[in-house]
Length: 451
Image (cartoon, rainbow, N blue to C red; front, side, top):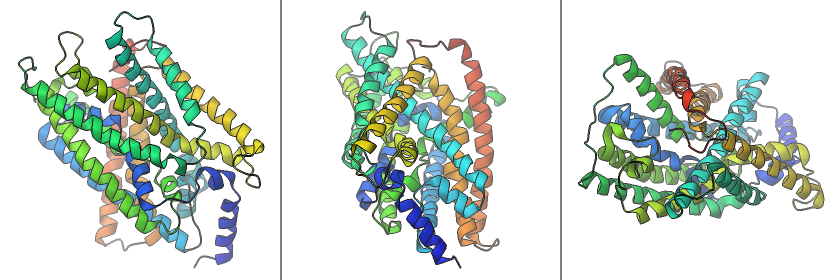
């Protein structure tokens, strides 16, 4: 049985931690967790789902999408239970890295999770700024086709806005922004579905071809790349930090928040994947807007519909960038903040402004320098989201609850770990292969995002 004195000491240590007291403030209700989870999972990456289906076909695409949804819901529920069990034992964990190190009893696991989480959070922060800059460029190009502004100019504009928004002090303070994000995701999904149906039924619609690549090796690589894309789209990687924003006890609230999030997922993911793949088949672009607005020929959907959808995507990207920056902010304030002084005292306010601004500027600089970051994100997703969301939760549950090795739960958890470890390795290999094949298109500070 756990020593309650040790648990009390750990809890007290966390209470005086500025990162915990300020950034991961525990004041939220279950619907706030639902808003945070939805923003963390349901984003513009769903526009790549038709492209993922291109490497899988109808049957395998629907199967993989459904399987990933079931497994990730189960995985997040298990992690929530592990967090609740630790809290009941007097060890409340509000950070993924501390949970993994405590349950698995290994110091290196702490640094492993820090490394993976940092890769994911920085990757999504950079990607959000890059895609938001691309959205602004699309709108600008439609208004001024021969304008002088370049992609890096729009990335700079987005970075300035993100610097301002980054000064919101706590994760909990994002709750209304993330509620707006939820509605924005429903809005641009509905517009995209309507645009795809219009395009698929128009006289200029491309011929619908759902055949897979003829070579078995290429087909296999494409399939594993598609699986990595779908896994990344369902990825979260910050569930303990989201659960930390809830007022204790959090376990029942977290289940309700997950149900809200997966209700939105059911509405958006399937409609986006099916409508886009139906309309364009194996000609689906990695961003379905590029299929709807081809470089050659007329738009396949009303331009005003696409413009509104792009604006919705742009606005949601700010929320996504903020959510995934919270772990970095928490780490910075854990080191720089003084919990004995107020959150808005000069002692805490000045370092917060400086450090968060520097972090955001660095993300913006990398986004401008590497406009082919989508390929790198594929690798990050395979080696980041799959370990954190498909493997570690099962291992943590087995270590915490110790189900008998002959039990159904143990067998299911072990099977998921083995299958997704293999899928992650193959997905990383396939994503690296695609990055190498696309290397000739890469150009530092280029004006085009590599597809």
